[in-house]
Image (cartoon, helix red, strand yellow):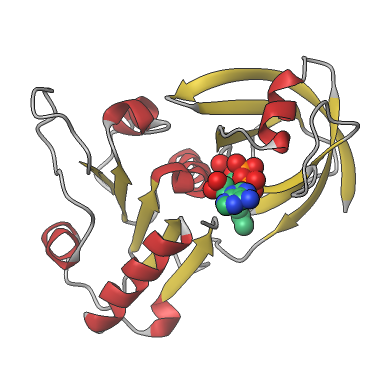
Length: 235
Ligand SMILES: Cc1cc2nc3c(=O)[nH]c(=O)nc-3n(C[C@H](O)[C@H](O)[C@H](O)COP(=O)(O)OP(=O)(O)OC[C@H]3O[C@@H](n4cnc5c(N)ncnc54)[C@H](O)[C@@H]3O)c2cc1C
């Protein structure tokens, strides 16, 4: 379905990362983890990649508004969307995507996010929080440094026995006070933080390179293909 949605606000949520909040059409529904395409109407800048991008929802399905968050770049789309003011409209088409939580909430979930790949998991975790965290969720969240970690404070503020958030910073300056993991997510990190439960379902989201690397590691660890769900954000 196509909708015209009104921009309600925008704010910087991490280094070089901006969140946009849109009015939610009354009849628009989606599942946590899904995405939509956003098309700019009469954009200020144009290029050969066009005025449309796929963006995962970061807000839960129950929210009154729709929240997306994106890494900024100098593409015409990103420069143009930053020029929008509150009250301006964009065209939304969706929802799309199969990165949604399993109906069986007795199965433990492991979400692996690279950078801005956190957006669908933010939606899922907020959704699960509203339901009282019926299932076990482990989030492995990889960023270069804390400044670039989108929704970092929000995620760390959620305290529940069924939610474990493990962040790793892969390009951290030696003199910062970060005391957590400092390497890319690998078999060692997965084995240390994920309980050895063969029923676990793995959800992967981030750049294509990161997601493919995670899938390869999981398969080499014996995780069945049908226990791995992925969303590839591209380059
Ligand atoms: C299902 C789905 C959900 C997504 N959700 C999100 C989300 O929640 N947040 C988010 O930020 N992104 C998300 N993305 C990715 C998003 O759609 C964009 O692809 C991404 O943000 C890059 O857009 P861009 O306009 O910055 O770069 P684009 O102009 O689309 O370029 C993509 C890449 O190609 C490179 N590139 C562009 N032109 C050239 C060139 N001529 N030569 C060499 N390299 C070039 C750019 O540097 C960039 O890295 C999602 C993608 C998918 C498929």
